[in-house]
Amino acid sequence: MIPSPTHLVLIPSYNSGELVLRTVRDALAQWAPVWVVIDGSTDGTDESLRLLAASEPNLRVLCLPVNSGKGAAVLHGLQAAQAGGYSHVLTMDADGQHPAGDIREFMAASQHAPQAVILGVPQFDASAPALRRGGRRISNWWANLETLGAGVQDSLFGFRVYPVAPLLGIMQSHRWMRRFDFDPEAAVRLVWAGVPPLNLPAPVRYLSPSEGGVSHFRYLRDNVLLTGMHIRLMIEFVFRLPWLLRRRPALAVRPE
Image 1 (cartoon, rainbow, N blue to C red):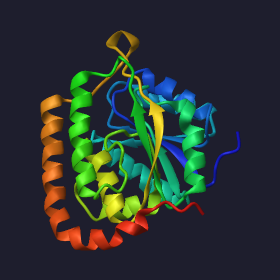
Image 2: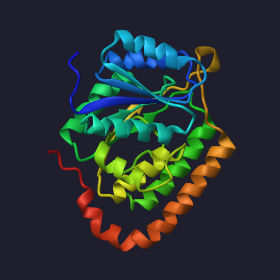
Image 3: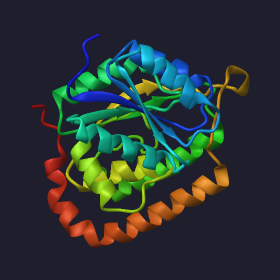
């Protein structure tokens, strides 16, 4: 497979076990290059991935010394991507939930509309926990209020293609967006920055522990984090509102 000079797959991983190896292999079967950011993992997967990278030229493994959160891992990958001349990254989780088979479709959509952020809209099956789906509806409601209904169909799903430059600029100017708050705040702030959202459906599967499923989501801790995030965004939204109303017509996606 000929590596793309502009678009890469970026997989942040923290103690994902053997699932990360399967996820990486599935991603490599669809796209090149694929980069993994090991976020201070202690389960030995960093060594396993380095061994795989030694025989796979389209795989690069980056490592953070301590666990810093998903957003921090993505930020590290974005900085390396920009230094390498890449313009877009597709982020996907390491735990096997996201559909590697849809990578090419999402990359093609990004290449067709490079000014947009391509947002995955999860298509749930029976494996999705009811609590997670309920919390998602609340976060989506807030995100659509904060963006004046600009078209963020799902604020939490991490299977996305981001334009590197605007997202990196946003993250480097804020100390937030480093943990579980990364995905929803990235979607909202990109819209505020004038980056139009383009939504594509994507199947999602929650793997059971017997299937090797790993979840670092903590219901109380992470919902408190999300609540604080939306409070911050709403305060800023009030001050941005006149400007957002004027900017709203410019958010229509116009393919280049």
